[in-house]
Amino acid sequence: MNTQLHIRRLFLAGCLATTLACGLPAVTQADTPNAYKSITVLYDDLNLSAEAGVACLYSRIRWAAKNVCRGSGGLSPMELHSRQFARCKAEAIDAAVKKVNNRILTAMHDKQSNRRFG
Image (cartoon, rainbow, N blue to C red; front, side, top):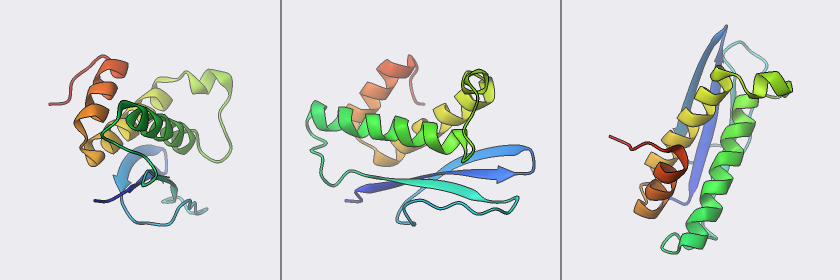
C-alpha cells in the first residue's frame, strides 16, 4: 500500500492546474513559468481503518492543498476567499481523496464538501 500523496500545483503563465502523484520529492518549487509547488502528505503512521486516523489524514490533505494553492508568496485575505483559490483547493483535495481510495476518507470528504464523487 502506498502511504504518501504528492500534491502539486502547476503554474502556467496565467493558467492554474492541480494534480496529484506519488513518490516524488517532499516539497519542490522552481522559479520557471512552468514550475510546480509540491507537498508530500505522509500517512504511514495512521490507521486508515479507524475514523480518527482518517480524520488526521484528511486534515493533512486540506493543509497541503491550502498551502500548495496559495503559492510561495502567500495570498492576501481577499485572495484566500477567491473562486480561483477555492477551486484549486477543492480540486487538489478531490484528487488526493480519490488517490487514497479509502471508503471512510471518501465518506468524510463527501460530508465536508456536501457533494458526491461520480
